[in-house]
Length: 192
Ligand code: HEM
Image (tube, rainbow, N blue to C red; front, side, top):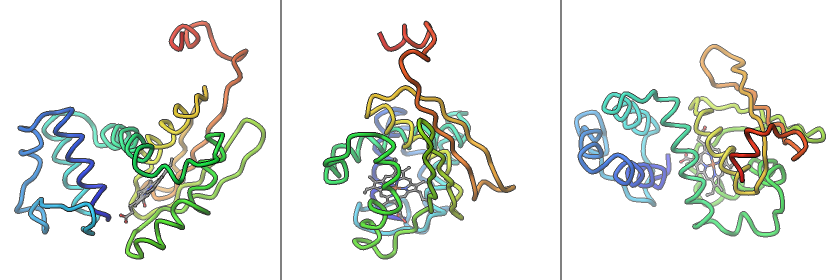
């Protein structure tokens, strides 16, 4: 897995959980890299799993919540550092439909060792279905990224997740865009 996934993760942990916790989750004996990452390096996917799992032990926050939170955080980094992928894109659904066919395709050209998920998408009116498939089982991370993307484009939405296999390697993510007239007074209050 690319180094920036690690460096950004540790930066988020330092910022939001503090240096002590960041130090504690790096247990060099568990980590072949000894917890030293550079953004251009490539590291075993098992190391990010170990770091997230250690963070969960330290904070008591479930792994799924931490992955979701990190997905949301990382979208903000993409927005800043990969502006090229946002150029000319005017809606969240257009952006999300382009992950497989454009964004991750370009990522793979740049970093042939990158291990990327597969997303099959179907759009019908205000609904986009994204079928996530990956042996890395990071659908919660994907959902964090997707929610941040919807928010970036100013969309109101509901999102449902259906795990299609035992392990979470195949997950259907259904996103429903809401028109302003469909919003409840409570959600309108939140956005005011
Ligand atoms: C909402 C938009 C996006 C979604 C939902 C998404 C989803 C994912 C997921 C779930 C993974 C984890 C690997 C896996 O599950 O197999 C991943 C990895 C990755 N994505 Fe994306 N992604 C998005 C946007 C981007 C953008 C804009 C970039 C631009 C640089 C990018 C670059 C990468 C890279 C480099 C990896 C790591 C692959 C590796 O290190 O082996 N993604 N993405």
